[in-house]
Length: 433
Image (cartoon, rainbow, N blue to C red; front, side, top):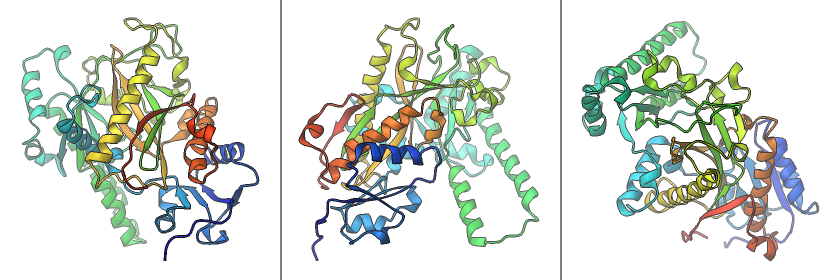
């Protein structure tokens, strides 16, 4: 039986983001942008008047009713794609970049994404085998043996499925890398000893938990460490601290991609020092990691609105922020097109879905932005209360750009309007509408 169009103009919405910071901001955005006589808030799909009623789900990924979305493609909209590993898993992301560059060598990704070395490893004793095909790493290690400390190439290690900065380490030799994995094994052994007497209430649940941890600590990527990074001098409040840019990206249907202009600058907890200036940089990660979720008492003042950063930075033109934003838009467009066209098994945009991604970029001392990672369901709370208007504005743009057009609520003027806060980075037709 052919799918029926909804006969009612009402939009029934289930908003359950399971986040005390985010939930009220989403609701406020919907009420501010949606016609009051159209929006109907519900707790469950069972409350909808008909199976083909216009329905919006804005929930955590695990809570979405995927079957309803797939069975009602004309009337049911959700806030996540189902398959997007090509973007949000670090080892898949590096493969996406390499595949796209093999066919499009002129892409900006060749300049704005550091090449990655991928490998798999279960135990430190097998590191030699894991690095057999990691030619770039082995070549770097050999060169480093002949160089002074300040001249050596440093690498950053990232577990393929970790987030919030977990598992990130710095190294410049095979000995360093071996020590990192051995320390993880020691930590794991200690944890096993601590919990060996615990009762197992649910064997399946415990197996699943071990599976997640195993997958986190099996796939790894190593990338050249970005040094020197861009640093903003005094009298700026976070002077001489490393920072990254958090950009919010909205992907709509199959496929438009927008870059939200109000961005964040997230600063490390301590003043930057080069890796070789510490006896063990992995004991001093607070000067290298800009993930504010890992900061405790020093987190205060670590988050700034990007456009509030000083115009005057030594060695850079006064328009460096606009130049950075323009480059971020180009990088984003190429990255999502590369995933959509080159990794179709692992990124499948749906016409009746949208998704917000938190995309991180790092600037080097010359002002060149490098893509670090792409996060699904980003941690909006790191924005803090002082800057929550940035997140509020983002959700309002989502309503205008992704939700109202899908349900036929956007006027012709709204559909053709060039938006001040949203820059269109990609507009392609994947033939799935």
